Length: 315
Image (cartoon, rainbow, N blue to C red; front, side):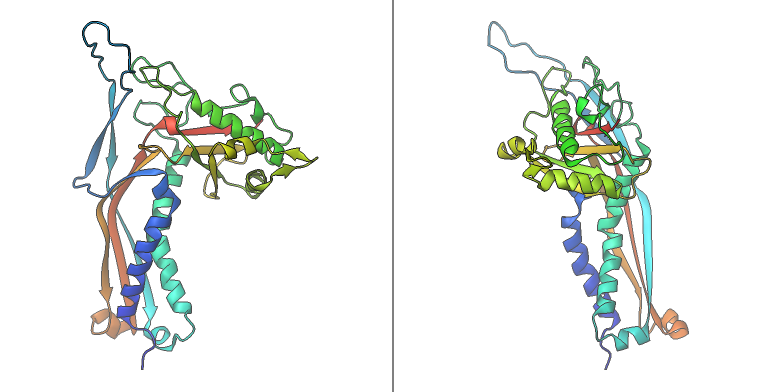
């Protein structure tokens, strides 16, 4: 009596798919459009809305700056082959775990891979500048930087650029948050004043170790109170992300706002995951005594608001 058949593979994949999609960090950093219905979607990005003013005389309408940004859907696939003897003999749950990992790679990990690729590419966003850049502006905005060094955030000046201490990390995080709070739209409105939740991404073990220490220590080396305690008391949250796939990042930290109506990235789906199974009774099974599960999707990813992300380089 088989312990695990081809129908189990489909059921397990589907259940892990639904669970993992809601859990992955790329979803939290992105505006998700599940209803794409064309090869390329165009997103209209608007500038700031007018501030409230004392009503004196007639209403004063102000034009809204606008830009557009295109994201193309691309086809993706992954295929798993499992020998029937492994299906029949699985009594330990290892095969079940393996199929679950396959689901993770096709769902959560793929969206994350797309976002990591965007960060590495540092491509053009809606205002025609690189996502992390030193001269962002839309319409009549003041030129702003979200690619910063110790010139803008003095706390990025540390003793060892590849391994800041937890005390240096705490000061750097506070400085990056403060820098994001200075970003304004074309109407002069500060766009991140209500921001309270941020993801902090690094790519090396030393950087992550120091970051994690800064986010967990109430009292730091030398019995110094962690300066982040004030931010925590005010409701600020930091979510550490260890992303080894980030390239050329041994001295860099990236911070992303997580709680805005709009997001740092945009994910779109034209075709959700579809399954094709060659199981018992198929020619493939007859020739190979194996089942083949193929999954495919059509989706795309791009940049959202540069104002909701910042890159700091330690020096």
